[in-house]
Image 1 (cartoon, rainbow, N blue to C red):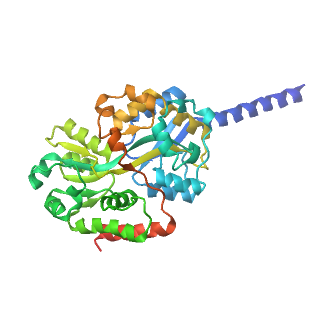
Image 2 (tube, helix red, strand yellow):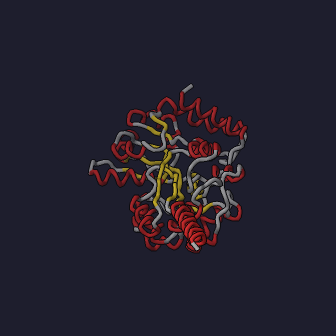
Length: 365
């Protein structure tokens, strides 16, 4: 009896230990996302609702994320790649398919965005859209007027024409450090296919930037938000939500800086950042719980209100602040939507060309 009792006690202890270990694994989710891209209060709300702690790290470039993923053992359970990188990374096998039975809030998603995302993720098997937006022009209204007069800011001419860039040099021009989309924008501007992978077309896109390089102050993808808000720069190629965040920060600081955002009439790139689960994720159930939580309409609405980006959740739109949902810079009208283009992933050869030309541009060589 003692031996049987001991065996029973050991079995119970083992079961409790195993359950405790499994429970502990489900109590944390490691998220790797873009900087300034979520309301911290939502992370607290998720933990309160689920008991799962969020370990949250940030990056400011797709290349940083891709390097970690391709190296393996990234340590992350949820990441947020931009569409062309997502497509390339799916082919590289760095993601696992989503278990849609654990994502009941998929019913809230917007077919318009889900369909566009399927161009990169056929069947929408690996990713769920978090935010989407456009890459356009952010500017300091007063400084643009002082440098160029009463010019209407509605065209890429404002920054791509060398004579305009030269006049804006003294007040600070920033170019987004995201070569895939900035080249696509330049190629579209000069009448070429924005998704071209031809060396000659890529170099022609690069020539647009080389022509204005002497007037460009910085190339960055995160610091430009505060620079624009503080009046330290006057014009940037940047992401819609970032620039609207700069606008909000300037208004909150009451520093007299008026920041505006425009989608140029020639059209621009529409990007999508989507949640995906790395193939080597350690906390897969927690990852699904996090993604499902972020697809709750009220959560998606809060997220968009905070970062001022459009999201892929149709059910959230009626819950959002109208300053965001009715802003054409966030949710463009139907006519503008027709002028938004996507780009496919670059192959190794084309990527080398892109990297070479972009390095030449940034270094001024």
